[in-house]
Amino acid sequence: MLITPVATTAAKGKKILATLRNRFQLADPACQEAVSGIIGEIRQRGDEALVEYIRKFDAPKMSVKQLRVSDQELHDALESAEDEFLDTLELAIERIYTFHEREKEQSWMVTREDGTITGRLVQPVDSAGLYVPGGQGGKTPLVSSVLMNGIPAAIAGVERRVMMTPPDKNGKVNPALLVAAQEIGITEIYKAGSAWAIAALAYGTKTIPAVDVIVGPGNQYVTEAKRQVAGRVRIDMIAGPSEILIIADETGEPSYIAADMLAQAEHDPLALAMCITTSEKLAGQIVKQLEKQLAKLSRAEIAKKSLGERGVILVAKNLDEAITLANDIAAEHLELMVAEPFHWLTRVRHAGAIFLGRHTPESAGDYLAGPNHVLPTMGTARFSSALGVETFIKKSSLIAYSEEALKADSAHIQLLAKLEGLTAHANSVAIRTKKK
Image (cartoon, rainbow, N blue to C red; front, side):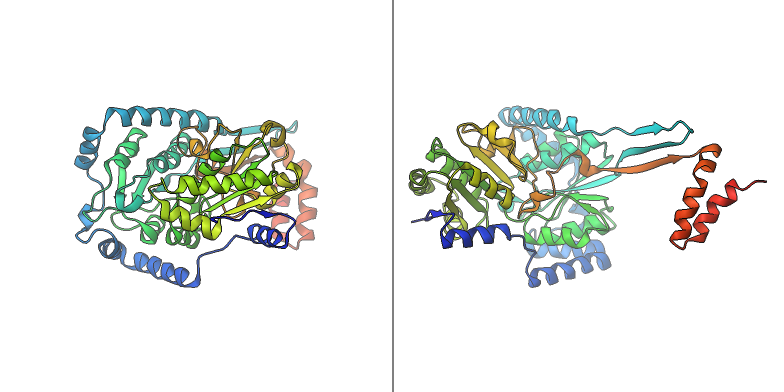
């Protein structure tokens, strides 16, 4: 049996739940050390080191002059684009723009009666690096990643948006990625992947100026590199393998549930596909559907390994328990495949994205619904959010005192400053307010 359903109250079920609650983990020490070395090489030798890594792992004949995608390559990509692809791309862009435009924040100020003005100035960062994975050596272009990374940055007003993606063995980038980038206004694109691409974005090279924010999904080397450069630049999140949790009652359709679990499992052998159902009968039907549908998939081996080693089907006492467990797990994707999903929505506190009802597959959110698909994983949905416009903005506090207002606050400021032993702080107020 691909997955054996387990009751949440059984010893094995409790053990599984304990593991799920504590699944956050960083890259292994070997990966951390390797990434640290890569970053050091890029910092010291810039383009020279960058090209060495690209030649070794991706494109053997890459040169420094070929790092940036040329105007001709951009033109050729647009010329080769089929109308059907362009129509779908246009619809996806419209949906994602419409959703993310509601995330924009405004600067604001408030004035007190004594004339003091305080507020917040909201501004975009100057530059952002958008990492897009290669997708099986360029054979499966991750167009959705271009849109999900690039559109919120555009709405935020980021002036310089830089796309970084690994080349294929011939030093080329899949035309679909280049078309998608151009359609949302990105023309500065470089052919580099993995940790060396992240290092170049963070520290800059002669060819690639550094950026302020780095976003986008990737393998463990990309994720670890983002972790190591965080602080020098802002990153979107520390992301682990993709994951889904489906909550289903007796009305759940087993073929839909199995299809959605498989959609997650085909990402990666480490992907985590989970279901908590209140129906023991449904649990068994889901297993049968998983086995039936698996054979038809192009990535069946990956999905089979993922489900066999990490897949979970738990049987809960009722939906109250199932929702409580969902909050404990805090999954990246949470599907409520129950009779009244909006009734239970109010109970959900922790999830990256929530999909309501049997006609809302997670894949709709990946591509066309509008919300961002770059989401917190490994339980970090307890305290973090999807990538959005706010990822690309910064906020400065505004403070303006009148002479009268400072005099009114003078004694209070000095008291607190002296209490903390900071007499120069106190004096900076006193010197302005003492009688002349």
